[in-house]
Image (cartoon, rainbow, N blue to C red; front, side, top):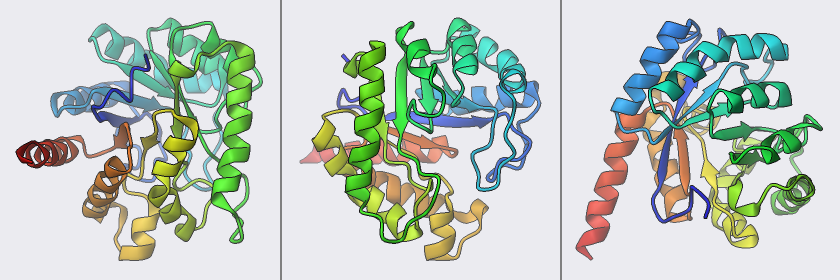
Length: 265
């Protein structure tokens, strides 16, 4: 059985071990700062942490695999030792292999196994869950999103199957904020249920502090919590099994209240 999609919404806290994150500006670049932040998110109720060491913001500076792992190693190793369920956000097979050897149990690939030809095999050699995100190199205003999802995810699932990754270890991510117009980002959330139904796999939704809230609400990154919460809760109604966010405590409270209200019925 997939570790996600069991009827409970998993709360995934974000730990950026980067000097150039759009949301926290390198506040947790030092290992000790990243560890303190990760532990605080777990205390706030995170079910797992997604640790990344290469920014995926527009215009990001690529990081060599060795440097990416050097940033991650002290953080991943200690969090695993602490008993935390760790996801590593990477597109590189080298980094994924090291992370899995260090005890990470989820690989979050923003290019859905398609960026590195060795990624699927690395995941297959473990018992890890893999998050397969939809992505595009270019923005196309005329894009048929559902057709492009189908094209992309069919390819990713083909790679997974050929490598021997069982479907019960796969989670899909509609890729909000990646290669899409702001209107398409909204469409990706609104049609999340279609994605879940079409593939029969758990879906992760991550819209935390994204630029869509700046576009539609005129809010700076530090002022996007309300928009994030509303959108994530809408996603849960559409069947999202995992929510990825910076503000864990507020999401845990919102999800608890949602469940209390549902239980009254």
